[in-house]
Image 1 (cartoon, rainbow, N blue to C red):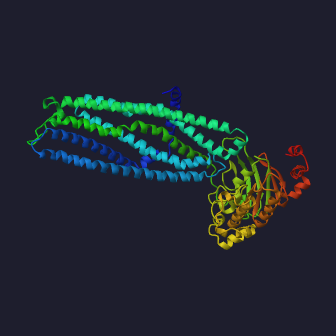
Image 2: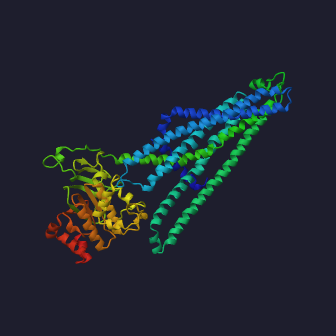
Length: 633
């Protein structure tokens, strides 16, 4: 064990102890399915007992046949036991596998259900501290690790230890000194060597897993930004870092395999010594009937008129009986390493669950607030928007993005949401969609708190983003995302309203034409119009346009803005943008700054009375220099 592994071992042991002590995912299933677990262990033990008994009776029968008994009938009883144990062993193994997999699959099913519920509770991208890939890893890899934890770690180790106890006790009835010697040697194989493997290779495995995760993260991140690496002329730097990580991963893998080879050789030597000890003891004990004593004497005295007692027949029986037990004992050091590998998955699941519970510290509100939260007449229009003293900060930061924000937006009309990057515009929209709960304060859409389980963001709030995604499916299927049961007439009407009907008519198969991946066969403006058609089909009361025109040329932007505002008339439209293009079409302007609203009013009113707004408007149209705009900001 090298110095690095020695330094990391205490930390690893502490991590494992903490993971198992705080576990809320694995330990509960021991109590819930205790009867199936007990049955599985019993069947596994019986399967190995039958395997040992098969070799025991086979060794005795072979030795008996070699002594040329008076008649073949002398082999009848031993051959009967050989058939019983020979048939019983695979049957018991099959039933044991059936029971263990039934237990594990029941447990895995419950784990997946619990994980889906956990992910649903923290499905908000607003609050999530983990990448999307980590959630996928939990669903696919970590649940699989928990399944392997039972099948390839807990059950093999428990069965081996139980068999070890039974074998030593059984041998103790024949000879206590040899039983103690076997207990010592097998104890090294079942307890000392697994512990050494965990200490030597555990830290390496954790380091290898960390490197693999970093390789995946870096690869996915840099593939998306490969053009920036190439254009900056630093692609060799990235490849160098990637190759260095791969080199370290290969070095660790080689060290793990080297240790495993040495361990396996020592393990086989140890098992060989056990077989030699049994052979020496059996040879000394059963050399003749006179040399046997106790229970061994009773065995040595067994015989009949067809096969007189011959003590030496039992030598092969006792030695061969040990070899099937090696099959149960040899996987234990490898299985012990599974505790390190799979415990990390258990820790991930528990950490994810705790984060989910922490994110729901804000209690759910009732569907209908009291009269003091309504309007002057005690009621609220169906989709009015109200923020009441809302404060929100991202996990791990102490600076609120929104601070004591209070505002009311009546239903209908167009509201332009402006502000610098990081001012809170997107956070404002995310909270409105119910993607997270504020640290304090309440948010209402109509009479429903967005933190309430009855709030349906998908039904009430539609979103058109900067780069709407078009799926590699037919145009019809892309539109049906907005309304799954829409008729062809409704689809054509939506396309007509967004100005895409002529373009759709030109497609080879009309609505059934398969669109290229990411909608590459459509221009940027056309992709936005398809997204708008989805919104029209779903008919949400509130539509958020989140930087929808970035990357579009001015003519396309102006035409698309006109189309959106005209087709969405009657809905509340929140136009989130950095610049003031099209703001004159809005009924109201909200300018976010320092967690609050710095400017609020109609475009005409702000242009008439607010010097800062006039400066920003002039700069956006290119009439002033950037220094003036910076001072205004």
